[in-house]
Amino acid sequence: MAQNAPVAEDPRGAEETSESNAQQAQQHSNTSARYLIPDPPHSHQQGHEDTATNGRSVSPSSAMTTREQQEYWHGVKSERRLVKLLFEIHSTRTVENALCRYVVYQIVVIKSGSYDSKRVSIERRYSDFERLHLQLLQDFSEELEDTALPRKRLTGNFAEENIAERCVAFKEYLAQLYAVRVVRHSAPFQGFFTEPELRTAHGCLCGGQYGRALDLLLPALDLQEKLTQHRPALMLPTICAVMVCQRDLDDRVAAFSTGQRALPMVRRYGARKYRCPLLALMVDLGFQLGHPVAVLQEELCRVKDAQRGPVSMLSLKELVVQEFT
View 1 (cartoon, rainbow, N blue to C red):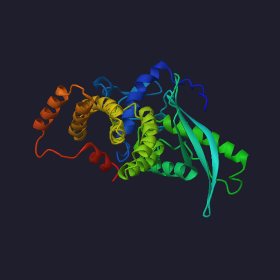
View 2: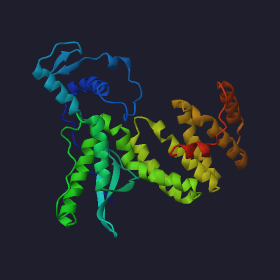
View 3: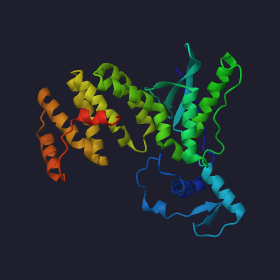
């Protein structure tokens, strides 16, 4: 199992903390929203802070010299924060078949600062890293100007020393991506860690292979929990898929418990399309388990009555299947 690496100290002084909020806001305004996942709203005080360059207050309308502009944008691009996740390359294996030969890297994602009992691992090959880098460059070329993807070698790609060197390079590459706020919140970065497994899991779910789907969903959910701290509602499709699999495997106690985890998120973040199907399944499970469900029934009726237009009759399972079709 990978060991926790020491957490790097934040090189910025305390005075620069107030700068980062405005710099990050400027980053968001100059970045395409195609892949960017929005953050929860910040306080109004943060929105009124002026950015600063070399300790001098500079408002967006201030005239700046070319040198000041260069220094300002360099500060924006190099925005960093204290690392909260660590990435280790736990091991590698070489895959050979009739068509190709490639190395698979086992990546372990560790939450720093405390003991992490859920050190989930995934396997990715060089082409996966390459695809991620190209996706990120479409929207974050300025932020990633100084971040390079480890290059392929013309020869010796399968030599042990070269594989070991690349493991270190990939570990540093992921840490650099995570250190840039808009990058670590983007859909391509988060999808790199979970999307292949989630798509396979949903394929299994559609095919009735609920045990296999659950084996893939649970580790993916653990990873999402680490990666989506800025917006926990992004875990809802996966949580609901877990609940459906547990119900169809006749593990009603686990399914109801998973529903109890999902329902507060649905209420808090206004995930309307999930609310009625989730409540309906929880009422059904509650009846079977002998739990009091009057409050859930009242909420279900209230939500249906409050909806404008025709009420969706989709079950939670049908809704989950739609997520990846």
